[in-house]
Image 1 (cartoon, rainbow, N blue to C red):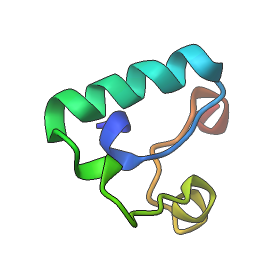
Image 2: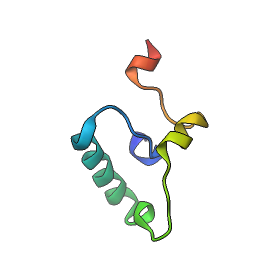
Image 3: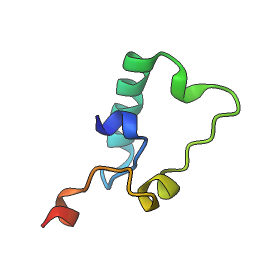
Image 4: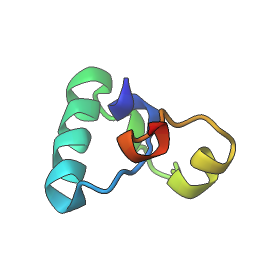
Length: 57
C-alpha cells in the first residue's frame, strides 16, 4: 500500500527505485502518464500517507 500512496520516506534513492518498480508492476504506467504531477509533500500534508516508524513512536 505504501507504494501506491505516492509518499516519500527516508529510504533514499534505493527505496525510491523499489517503490517506483512496485508501482509500475501494479499499475503499468498510471503513475508515469504525461501531465501527471505527483506532489508527495502535499499528499503528506493532507494526511494521506501512512505514518513512518518515527512518527508512530
